[in-house]
Image 1 (cartoon, rainbow, N blue to C red):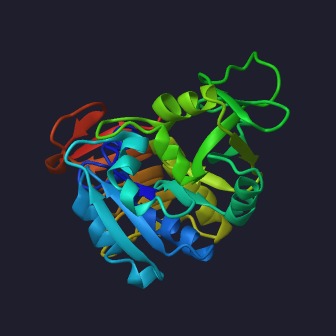
Image 2 (image 1 turned 180 degrees about the vertical axis):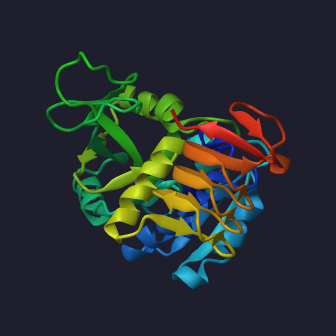
Length: 314
């Protein structure tokens, strides 16, 4: 199961006209990386939950056949949370162990290794964790010497000792987990389900991975990951279909979605230009996300300049 129902609030304004996992990453829908990740480990029967801008995901993936998968969709009239989403399709997940991941990640973590750990220890849940070396704002996951998950805590601080662990959103689950998931209502796994299971003495283990993992839930993370992958490919710009960078403009370390135009005399550095944006001659855009004002229903932050809303990254 791929979780893709969230509102993408921290990625605003990029999520005004599409679901967060439907945003392009290197000119491909972000969620397509999650599908390919699963199929690379032989997992081809996939359920994707939907809520915000659901058609953007359906258009990106279709029935999954292009990516070697068979995809079904679970549309939530009201958003149900991470475990509420599983509850809604529990009848399809009770025959065997199953995988749940987020639709907003790009990773090469060895999923087979996590599945082996899960089955060897007969765990109810195996959570794939990573060291949070940079102490980013991801909740800490505490474990004991047996690599059992003991607690979900707050954000790490610079003063604490040791290297905190963070949850990647990748998890291997036994159908037994449904004994702890409330029926027919909103619930979150790390708040409403796993603490109850731990208290009941269930085995929830930590599979700690050193694999690459990039999570795109904020504007900064999205741009930084894009630049990192561009540089690996010797690129300074990614431009979507129909985009035009006029001669005499300067564009570097930037992501252009579809049908963007950067006019001669404009300069764009470390920026994301959303679909249909026009950067006029003489404009200087740096460390910012730009979207068309006519796509934005309510100005949450940033500055309106001409036909664009410009949201600074920092």
